[in-house]
Length: 373
Ligand SMILES: C[S@@+](CC[C@H](N)C(=O)[O-])C[C@H]1O[C@@H](n2cnc3c(N)ncnc32)[C@H](O)[C@@H]1O
Image 1 (cartoon, rainbow, N blue to C red):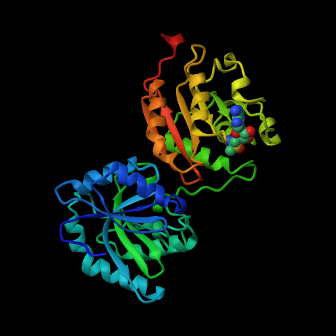
Image 2: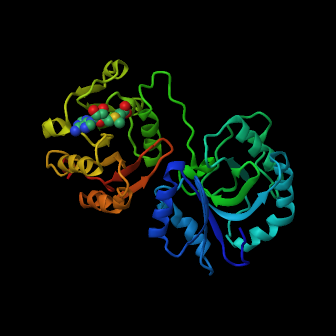
Image 3: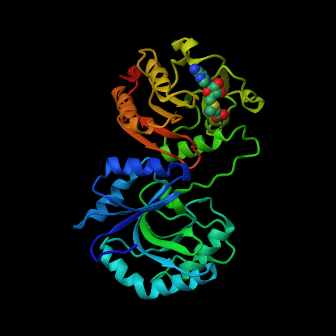
């Protein structure tokens, strides 16, 4: 990639299968970004010249639903063999980094740690941590040190505002070097990949996406929170809520896992959501949803519930399944529907553990229950 003196570049990473979706989304949201190069899970863009374009692009990149990470490009390191790469990286940091950093004019602190990952298989491993630790010796100035000691796994997380040097191994002999400042939940993890291991009593993989979704949303769901889980079987999402001390009504015509049914804070409402009386949800404040149906069906069901005078919902956390091509383009229209129900803080993202779907977190803020008025 040739880099003209003043035109900044960005690189984005995403799930392999979402590469065309991210390309499509970027073209729609940021038509002024010029697509430059892509490989599965990895896209680069040239930004228009001008002061602050890079800064504002980095700030707004959080709007990209299908991007796992976004970095300002510092350069690329290519070698003839994988074994050469650390040496070439060291030479990059010594000779090219100072000028590349100056050219970005980001007015942020120098990077204090290295994020190293493979965009096409971004789960962290002891090898990627060891690589990050090895490369961090070449950071300019002081590095944070303590967690970079040999063999430490996993390392501590950067704080909001901290700057990370991103090293994306696109090919074993092609590393893209970039930088990002931590602004959100996922920015603390290399490649935006949130590492989680399913607990031994975890009943489904869906535990992972709701555990991640609950942390990403920041919803204050704790002891005694009244929740409904629509599309609850076999029960991973309910388990993530129950572990926080919530009381859960699980709606699903299918069976729940015994481990979930045994929890005294769980009640199974067996059936389709449309068959159940709304008054069952009178006390519900939080709804999570994961039905394997088209987005408009999920939205119809949630609208029925949230627009009922009997129910006062403060927050929604639900998946929208993108089973057909073209549905991703309709996400803005779907979110408009959710806004129309009075949810004024809405986030949407394809999370680490979402597959052909995205997660929506919608909140009424401030929330005042009619009873307290
Ligand atoms: C992806 S699975 C849910 C996984 C679950 N969230 C977990 O954490 O284990 C989708 C579920 O949606 C349920 N479902 C589909 N349509 C539904 C409806 N109309 N009402 C309630 N549940 C429904 C299905 O029975 C199925 O169990």
